Image (cartoon, rainbow, N blue to C red):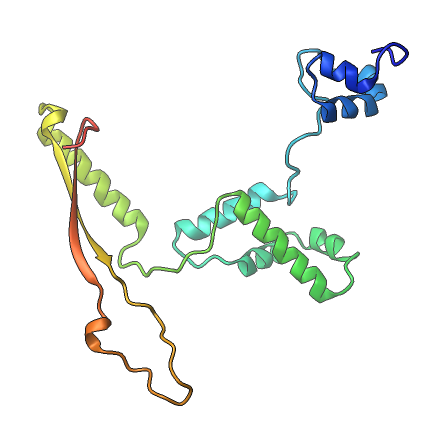
Length: 208
């Protein structure tokens, strides 16, 4: 590129280079020319998401273990883990915060970002009557028994049928009412309509 013979915009347009990209290249020209990276590398490095915590792998393992054991997991639990196992990092993190409250709120935000990055989200807890490990064992034992008995059966002749209830015309959870007045509703309006849906699929992944 010779600025004496052509303008920056004209050069980028003539060579099909996005103008914003070309401006960034010009800005980083010295850095690019001095770089000793291989020509096959597309960038100068340093791109990509920065780790939120230096002990992220350890924190993620803790989170997975808590959920695998079907215990409650909240961002407060994550903060407690950090206080217990990485107090030195926490003290260094909080030293420049305006107050303890500001630091705690900032730490909670970091935990929220970390959990979202690793595909954790808040759910309404559902009580379980049987631990997940026991359910997995029962499933595996049934699968082994089933295929031992029907291993010679063509997969197109094996059909799995799943039945589930579908509720519709759900009544609202709340109603407007006069302050001090009654919030009663007709009992016929407190129930949704229900139908049963059946889905069947063959063992060869074809719908039955």
